[in-house]
Picture: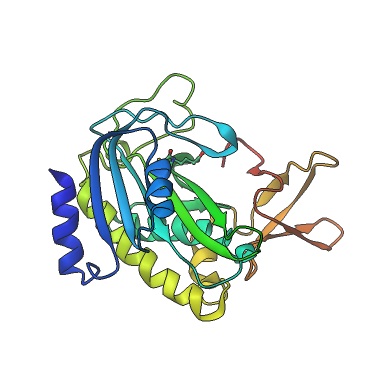
Length: 268
Ligand code: BTN
């Protein structure tokens, strides 16, 4: 079972003290499993892998199709010691970790589509859904759940996803190892998270993030519902906002979740 291999690899990577891995054949959503465990007192570092999800959740209330056998669906629990308004950037830390892991293992030209999709050849291989719970009545975080779906060995996608989704297998032309991908993602996330915790922002990760940003120094369209505009992406700042230089030379800072940013010719 591939989750046992993940556990073995985490021991080899000396990450077994931080993470504890639980594997389920079928779950509603790994985010929901981790939230229930967190409410019952689970400790930071719990990783829940689902072989399939019957109610996989995407961002903006969308569904995340989660058939068994090909992809990675996992969520893990953090109990951060910083204020809630610093938690949105953790999604960027996860996107960075997935992109770095794929490059480390397979040397594929993988990029980050700000804020948190990971893409190859202009198509998505990874989506991330972060959910936070506050201590009741306060601005402090009780916990954060980071849920990630990675298309590893998918050979085809539903017609509506076909021109926007791809997998490591399609990009490589051969099978990839779900266990190795997940173990390296977890190792890199832990390293990047420790970096983030030193300053409670992304200043120590900006260079790495921007070097993998698919839009860097390219034209993007900011889909601001009030007034969409075109500018040049200049990378993120330490809070995770995307800097977009407008034609008049002014710099806009686009916050995550506020508006979508696209290249001029399609999804990326
Ligand atoms: C997106 O819309 O891009 C985010 C997709 C997040 C999917 C993952 S799969 C594991 C975890 N459990 C869920 O229900 N969703 C996330």
